[in-house]
Image (cartoon, rainbow, N blue to C red; front, side):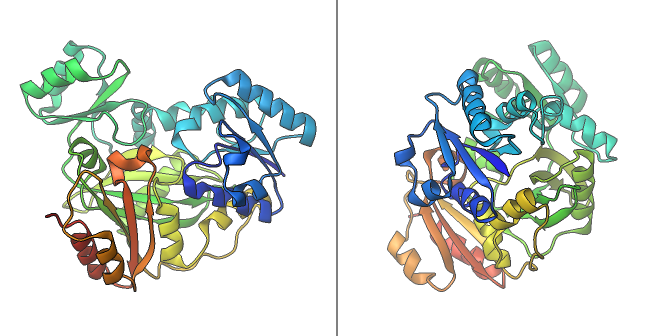
Length: 386
């Protein structure tokens, strides 16, 4: 099997996917704008071949790269980056080279939040009311219909970047003056706990692994307030969340892919769908899954692609908590104190790329244990301020 992996060096932990693909028997064909000699040794070893382009946004260069791979290795069987940023590029390349997976005719409903709402409704779910508002008149008409507060976000966007919570007339003016010149969708504000339903499906769309994240604060608030955040995996999740998550998998026809769905869980335990992503959650969440299950999700994914099947997945044996710190915040306890105090539960700690800093911090600590409260206590200690 010939698998093209776009930008295999980023994020830093994604090289594991290429290693596991190679171990599963695939030809791993890397394509990126990073010189080959700059790649980490494990990744260089895993790649059967590598094509260096000067600009990943230059589509002609990408086409030439895939033409080279096709000439040298034959039919290209899969192409992916597992990264939200390249979803549309991937779809175009799959379409042009007839590679299985999400192609251009399917990309709209998983990239545009306005189109997601239609699919949610067709699945029998009830998303928050929302509308693309291109003018001030349309914005004010929507606010008159649903009332304040509302949330405005790019209709196509990654994470919580340039997301606005509009609570007053002053906020309306700030939003209209400040927002980027891209299409925005405005949604009614929903007061509920943001939770996720995440996992991996096989070629038939069956969920082979699932998990759920809970956040100390919303990612939008972490970005807008430039504050720190922690989030953790749970060992079980609400039946209503699982039901809504599985319905979303079916509605969006997620096959042989990771998924990261966001929902609000309300006080009455009802579930409101928020957003669909057909890629893994960000940061070190895949590593958190591995720590929670004592399994290797990188290997699960590789085996699904190459062999069409994967072995059994262990139960959720541990809670796992990611705790972020930001460089601009003065913390009471030093890095050394943190490592010494939580040596028994610390499974990973690492500096993050600046791309993720605004959302989840410049430095991350991952702790795990069979009970949740000690992990929450660890987060409070690590993030305690002077």
